[in-house]
Length: 194
Image (cartoon, rainbow, N blue to C red; front, side, top):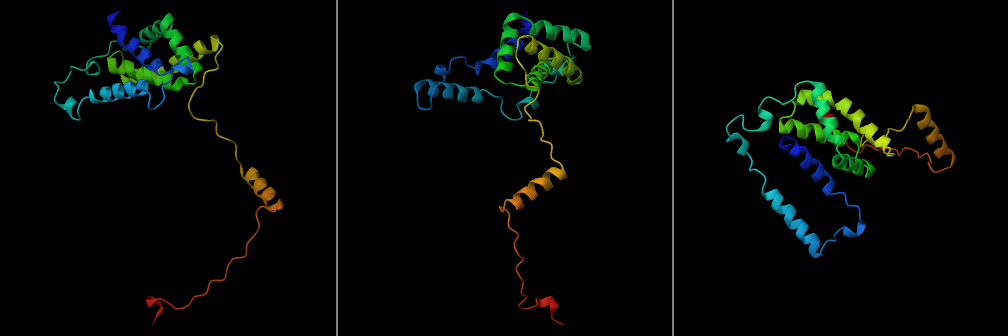
């Protein structure tokens, strides 16, 4: 159980920001906001100083050791079991319902697992597609239409559409053709002199 507590902490920290009751939000200048801002500033002060990782002996960080999972199947079993646990499942569904796309959830889960030494970055990339399918089906089965990415769908624009738009603009007299002003050359520059 101790080895999976890191992912529990990750899922808990991801859902701290999502609040169910809009009255719970604090307003700038209120004591609740000031306490939250001070706590946030203190967390930033606890960060390691630049270059600190270069002074630590190699191999102490979990990602510097051999990964716990080296095959897709056992790693995927671990992820599915972790995601299907009731508290984690509720948090994931809450985030999907709030509009967090599957690509963001997937990236956070896989990179966090790589940082904990659960799998390598290469295996994280291999796990991305099956994990996306699991997350999508989880949201879909719960009646949520999960977003896949943050990016909006590109609009179809073709040369015909652009010409049609400009033609309509010109016909409605919103665009009036202007005559090009005549340019008068007064004096030639130094290089033009012979």
